[in-house]
Image 1 (spheres, rainbow, N blue to C red):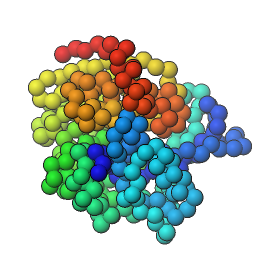
Image 2 (image 1 turned 180 degrees about the vertical axis):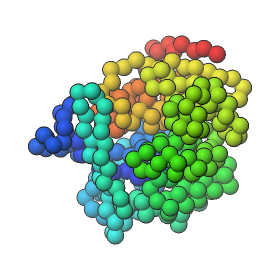
Image 3 (image 1 turned 180 degrees about the horizontal axis):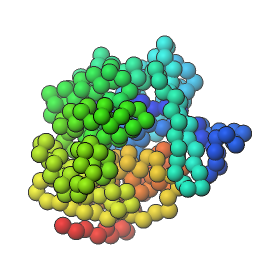
Length: 319
């Protein structure tokens, strides 16, 4: 039984080994793995939760490495299918002196893009407390979309909460393609975690304030809307109140994985039956720690580390 279940693609990541460096001038590349959904699963596993990741990987060394690394982090991969017909996806990342990572994807026709609704087991979803979905999976293929909505169907049937991070990736599809599909997904969410600019793009309202965004999405019937503000923290509303929780200041190395860590911190609070305010505090901390490491999930804390930080960190709350 897993408290948390998610599904999506994880790829092998190749990047220059130096803190800053371009791929074209690097004689060697460092190998890691990365994927939004598995990042959340890793973060929750480190925080002491039972997390399961559903996907497909190729029957190749890269697929083996993904499974090896996720299992080492305590993530349950028993529902992952090893696909002998399609390869594991790859991505390359480089960082310049401006500290803005550039990512290049080689994921077309990858094994994960062939995930289909028949790969989703009702018992797996039924046994969880929360199902986490990102917009990335919806962008990969029509069969992936069917798999996502099959998982949501099982979740709704068995009273499993659904959390959604839109994770808008305009390298995968245009906003015109993404908007109707993501809005259909968002309307199924109990917990919704957009970034501020993401939400404005989805609503096609570039001047909306955080409060206008929150009110719009609450009208969909979502229980809690949490707007991610990066180093500015977050704004959360559950219809009864709106809370702004300040972020934690850290030295940023790489921003990749911050949003996934944020979601994991919040979901961890939900799984511990904490208040929305306490969930938001945890989310800000895990998201902040994510940017202190150049890998996708290396900066995520353990449960003991998170509690130590919570006990000595006083966040400023405005209502």
